[in-house]
Length: 446
Ligand SMILES: Cc1cc2nc3c(=O)[nH]c(=O)nc-3n(C[C@H](O)[C@H](O)[C@H](O)COP(=O)(O)OP(=O)(O)OC[C@H]3O[C@@H](n4cnc5c(N)ncnc54)[C@H](O)[C@@H]3O)c2cc1C
Image 1 (cartoon, rainbow, N blue to C red):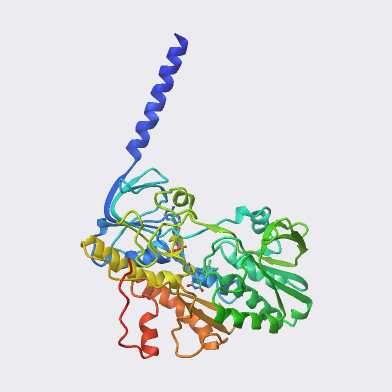
Image 2: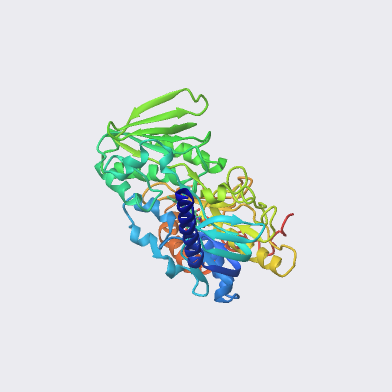
């Protein structure tokens, strides 16, 4: 009898809990749901906000602040601040959309709804997934704690840690400076070496370069994916006395003894521990677990499984993806996301109107390879890793004009044009500069 009474009481408690949660749950429905209000999500939402009503367009984004991440490299060099890279999310999202400040926790593509972390349910007709890549500092033992305390370990990749990079650089008097590139997909694959070149230039300006050995350790078998720029970068490393270790992956950080352990990826049993005076780490990255664990939406590697030219989901025609979390095999950059926004906008609009998909993404990505405090190699290329340069001169040279473009012009372009849905990448300028006025955009490939 006592057991029965206890069981009954527990049942009533769990019943109350259940109804309390269901009362608190909100249910939304919309025409377009944009998951993630970063570079790609915000820019594409701005385009749709011009024609949809406020309640028809929902952006699901958890962050209070939006960051212009390409500036993190410059912040690491001490010539920009985190405040310049940050805006309130409410100031950058289109006014004509409904912002739900929460995270996607569960996707149900068959029933077309998303459940948020707080338990709200959002039904959609069409969905754009733009959740980017997460930084997984936790995957390298010793790294997170090294970054969270005052140490010689630093990283430009997170807004939390980027300002610390210049502090470490200022304190670097002698010894070894190591820079890393992880064994995972990476956003802006050029950034790990940009900070290496900036550090080299800083030490030269301070007359300390002769006292410091600089090594760039990359898990990749090449210094850069595009041969034209790789050739230029090899020359640069040689002339600046920067050692490069290929297929070398950071696996452990000991910030008490200032020791880093690297693994030879071609012979995983071979590990080497080195002393450092400065260790700049680029963390492993992955798409958020809520996405990568959903095998209806994501591919083996955890990326939204979309067609590489149309950006439409392979199985669900009402789902598109843009930016770092899409399975498209391009270099993951904001420049690539810019080139994708118009493709997503026009192709998704066509699906909504029952028409065939008009645009095709060619894999365009650009990487302004900053090589110091006043020079930059502007790499631009397509899916086939062929250069796709905007300017009518060879861009594999270190140029001051390209540095000004990167530091002064591009942030303005981002905040004022791209996030408002008015910048689709430089394709038009490229055609004008190369006198290809009559070129037509290729139709979408199926
Ligand atoms: C150090 C550094 C240097 C860089 N340099 C350059 C450069 O020079 N040039 C260049 O073009 N690019 C550069 N990039 C890369 C560029 O910033 C990214 O490629 C670009 O921001 C990708 O846009 P995105 O919309 O895919 O992702 P993001 O802009 O990262 O946005 C993703 C958004 O999704 C949100 N989100 C995450 N999980 C969820 C969830 N579960 N539910 C809802 N929302 C979620 C996040 O809060 C975030 O706002 C750099 C990046 C870094 C870190």
